[in-house]
Image 1 (cartoon, rainbow, N blue to C red):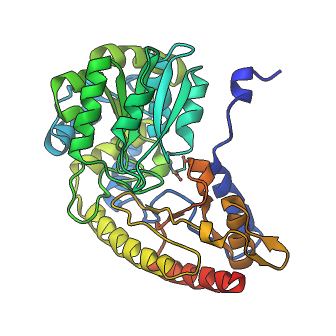
Image 2 (image 1 turned 60 degrees about the vertical axis):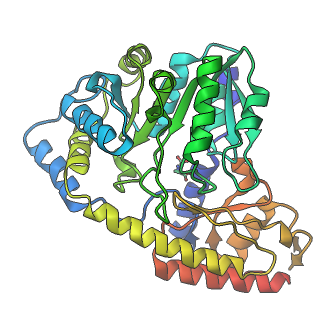
Length: 394
Ligand code: GLU
């Protein structure tokens, strides 16, 4: 018998869509992938070489549970320089991707019935990870422009609030939270004594010169209450290497390390060496990836905005666009009527072989999430196909 806990959890819609598209491609169908949230770029060469060298040198055994010191030192330096916040290497733990770090953090702080406030639209996994810990996700809407609505958060704070989980730059909206709203949230956290779980995995992908602000850098009081989540997957095109990390107070780190020691022993040793090379080596591949993403974002948004029934808000960060497709509701073609974003996703997949993720998976019904982590050529082709499919509806 499967536990009630697991039965309460939804499978990940992003992961599910990735498998479905892979299956269609395996069958020879030419699906264009705008569903998957991973850079299409290869992991930079110097990072791969560092792993290869480590393997040849026999660096293939268990490492310390919290990760090798060399990596935690590199992360500590990076946070000091880029995020303007000081974490000692023993206030940092390495996990198997940011997702696993979030779960470990939630397990470390949540008792059954504890509430975790999640502004939405949000990444598919947040509410499910909270449920896995027997905590209760409390969903609050973001502002109409998808930025953080601190007054909406304030309204749902109770004695049982254990944490607020934020994600800036945001998956799926591309919103970037400004300093002022983060300061207001930080003040609320200090006043009511709850944690902020701050997922900053898209921190490098901020366009138009806006800064990324780490909430933990705002004061000592908020640093003490922040669990900062980050990882190598997005910044260094290293999704498969599974290196995430969390930085937090010594108390939280101690608890997380107990859990990680029982669940994980350690993260892949070679990936850790690769992560050191990523952080300490040339940042040029990252910079050119950012420049390319910005071009793709502008192009894709322009194309989407011109399509009938679609409106697409500007996205300031990450590599996603979340167009509103509700203008297509009620339209039909070949017996399919667009009634919701799920139906629209199916229509696009069937009619245009274009894959995206329905917004309702991210608590954004009436929208679709497009990832522009695909070549410009494929984006052009995808937008052409989508336009043709839409012209059939109108
Ligand atoms: N975070 C990415 C996404 O939203 C990767 C898949 C996942 O783990 O959800 O598509």
